[in-house]
Amino acid sequence: MAPPRYRSLQELATKRWTCPTCANSTRPSVLRHQPRRSLQTTQKPRQDAAPTMDQLRKPFEKRNANTLYYTLSIILGTVALSYGSVPLYKTICQQTGWGGQPIKSAAHGGTLDPGDSDSIAAKLTPITTSRRLRITFAGSTSDILPWKFTPQQREVRVLPGETALAFYTATNQSPTEDIIGVATYSVTPAQVAPYFSKIQCFCFEEQRLNKGETVDMPVFFYIDPEFLKDPNMKGIDSITLNYTFFKAKYDKNGHLAPMPMPY
Image 1: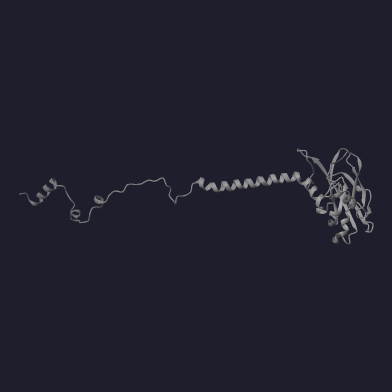
Image 2: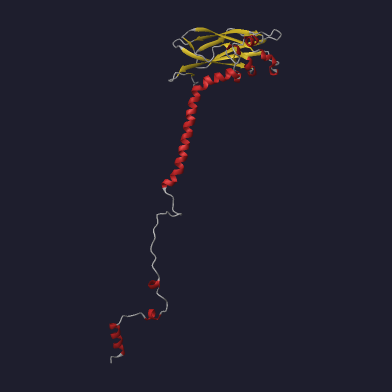
């Protein structure tokens, strides 16, 4: 019989060694009995994942596109308004008298029917029982237009419904250049404008003067008899008709437009 020490070595060689602490432990082995979990992968992005650069850019791209559309709309509208402003201004002012502009004569293609002879006769019949109105004339030119522009008469006195003819004189004082001018006009006081009806006028039309040339420009007008029925016209005995000439030229599209003033 081998001594105890050798017997223990023999047992150690012939048997599998077991840790005494683990052999005496009653705790079940977690690794031995717990089922394994398989790793699952999914294509669904995490809810708390950081946004990508494309996602960050998308709202700004839409906002920039809207801003571009609005800007283009404003530019196109401004260009269209610049080309149509002169004829639009002329039409509105002639029909409404807005801004002190005399209206287009109803008896000569205005609001009345030209075939209605009674209406035309009523408009152009002087009201002899009325006071005479004093019509004064004034003229001026822009700083870049080398013209001399003056009325030939200082004033005329007319009855409501009475036609009157006045003249202005324009002289191109440039020694070397033929110049195109365009005139605008206004009436003072401004509230009289709806009753100041022009029959013939040189306003808003091309006036080309050769170098050194002088021309006479007529104005044929009358005061509508409805002037006497308007209580706002009481106390108004003097009316001023003013014309201002501007230098103009044709643009690349063939539109006649006043030249801007230099700053």
